[in-house]
Length: 323
Image 1 (cartoon, rainbow, N blue to C red):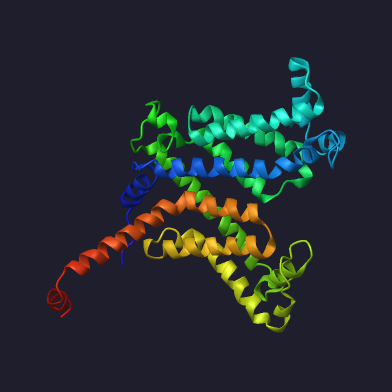
Image 2 (spheres, rainbow, N blue to C red):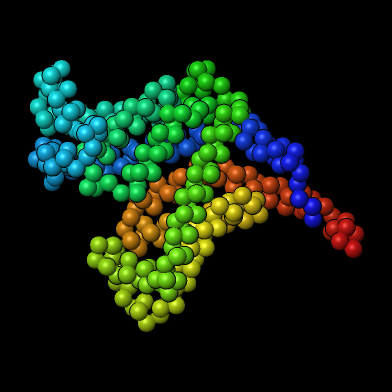
């Protein structure tokens, strides 16, 4: 086995980053992320004032003090709407909710996509700045995804921009670059997560998983019986470290990509079901599907076509080829 030359390496890198690809994965990315933003918003709706109102669980004076001075707090939104339209505090907070829903809906439909992507990102930034004590991984990943949608040509597929002729649906190097950035980003996310777990002895013996499953903050079911079978949590911990650390390899191998994607989906479904982190599990599944879902589906289609071709060959021809 000979190592590739510098020229061959440059050719492969150029092909990897610049070969025009279909914009369909980016269109799917836009739909999944904007749909998730709408889902999260409507889940918040019954408690919207309790989160963001002036007499919220964490009052404006406190939540604003917890942030940097340049962050845009919901109080600034109220002051603007009060000066312009005379809205009360609660009216301004609810008006902001419907502004965020409108922006995410525009992004979902893909009409003047980057405009709505920016407004959705801005609205989400205000949300994060207004309730810093409640922000965790799901909000950070959603915010990054919305920022990507400002820059990526996600309107080239499954959008009104495409239907109205505002955007072309042709493959391009810009689509390829955008998709590769998302794919590499996801690989780095899981590599860092898996590697960090591998450095902790409590992940190897299953103690971290055991404590997560039984502590009151996350416990969904009575799993204390697992104390009698410690090898179960240990094997599940090993599976978690393997599927996360190997993500950056398995997702690039066509023969195993589908199974690795199913593995990462099953991991996050487990997090949703047994730890109650439904939104976090959902956003991570959607990001992996956006990054590698189309490639995995193409792999499945190739397998199906290959099986059909083999089925169409007479048995004696197969025997002759194998003999």
